[in-house]
Length: 309
Ligand SMILES: Nc1ncnc2c1ncn2[C@@H]1O[C@H](COP(=O)(O)OP(=O)(O)OP(=O)(O)O)[C@@H](O)[C@H]1O
Ligand SMILES: [Mg+2]
Image (cartoon, rainbow, N blue to C red; front, side, top):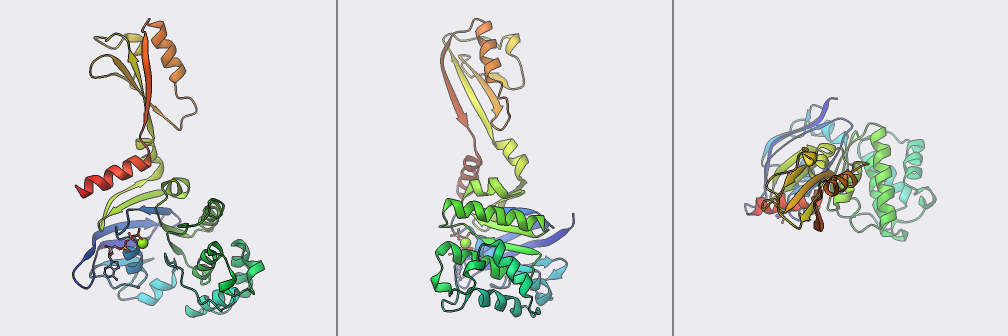
């Protein structure tokens, strides 16, 4: 895979001196989906806006397929589609014209078959002759996506595409994103829904206070974090872990009166049945059983809290 977006030491201070981006570095591979998670005010929209030429970076560089956004802006911008966080559409315009116009903005020749396929994919074809003001909120979000796709971008930014959207439309949106990925489009999305990142991203980035705290392959991250612990509390403490229970997944609790078993929540077999039968075979008597789970959400909260400390 090749790098399509390269962000180097990107900084942004707004007028008044507030530093919204404090030196962001990020490389994005062609065809991947990366989800940026971060609390309100973390700098997600600022980052996207800086890449798309909506805000002027204070320093640092961004290249899109080798085109520098400072020195070669038009070439870079043509490769980008942006679905902004705020819905801003002309209320009296017809859906199809809004989308056609977006293509024209990039100097691309009219292509009605393409516009038709985009509108159909977004289930907007039936509404093509409706005015924007006649659409529901979720439909307006789809129009924003259609507009962003009209000039055939290779990189698509989705800034909270599913905020305030119902569960069904959210799932639709995930399918649309998966389709676009299948076409080779690179997607960068921001979200507050951790399950959304879990569902569709290849990589997860966590951003807080203008800094990237972590960027990691989702599966690796989930494997690292998606662990569960089962604590088997014993009625009498042990001096050592019995030989029959020894494994990399089992350890003795601090006071010796509990066994702590770590397992992967996503594995088909957790091994709990075997553990409990081994415990019974050892003749150990149980007092209680407790489970604890570390989720992406926990880790996210921990990361962001640590950063705030
Ligand atoms: N035009 C502006 N002038 C001054 N400060 C700004 C401006 N735009 C954003 N900021 C500040 O920069 C910080 C980052 O804002 P940004 O919109 O990038 O956050 P975000 O991560 O997108 O948050 P959210 O999840 O709420 O959308 C915030 O503290 C915000 O108040
Ligand atoms: Mg934002």
